[in-house]
Image (tube, rainbow, N blue to C red):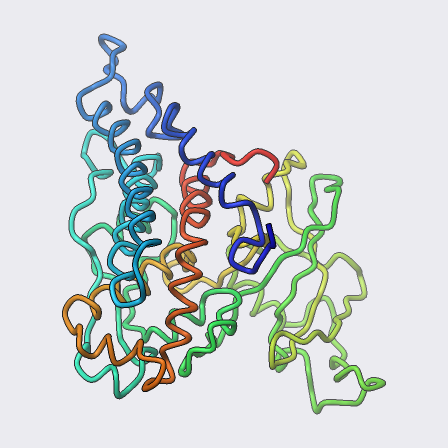
Length: 375
């Protein structure tokens, strides 16, 4: 089978096998042996503990059925089953997350927890202009807590939310905007040694290290001279919880110019604390997305955006638009009329292929487990 961008990281069949297998022995707080689910006096599952285990299993079964339904629909209706599949994946994440309490029923999700505005006229302003924000209560902020991530309470456009997603330029949606502090990709350099993990960091903003661009044998610009205690660089890296405790890997740091899409950025090498030299040390401090480890900047009280939540906001907004403004939605997806139509098709196709893996990785993050052997 030809491998494509949509399934480039792992075989989708392997992802579904891992998700289905996890229903037999749910991970984390959805486990029958999880202490928070056990009656201390009898050693038996409590009623809420049994409900938590059952919620994990039922939510994944429903998500799988909804994903199958989404595969049988075109763009006119696809956002609806895709969003509700992601919502049920969210319930499985919440059930597996020790961060959500069993006794207080935190794992039981209710309400969307998102608000989408300015649905009217989106066909004129373009999909990227649609605004969305997380609410204080509901499913979305609960899953954000499960993932130790921001509930994204600030009002953002879909173009801004999409900008938080790696490779979003592939969708070519007009109005997509990259964040001022970008997402950085971390490439581990194996093996870890002396409880330190060396990583190559790609995506350092060009303006952070560059003065007036200087020709470099046709390979871009040379970085301005900088020292290990450079305050500008330190200020940038200190915004990333995944880079906590960072130091330069070399007493004389250097940077390499790289091209990312239509822009240039810098690549540098750092070392990060890796207690016990664990293979999961980098995974625990970063976010694994489509085959890469990513560092997201803190946007609220030390919390970062999680790509699963970014896609949740996007799909919720698309489903709201398709349900409540069907005429505008059909105009947006008409490739003969609207420039957003093909990008929307690409976004929906990506979600059809990638949502199960995004959910699997989010479950692994929430429960601190590995469900996919060898990945």
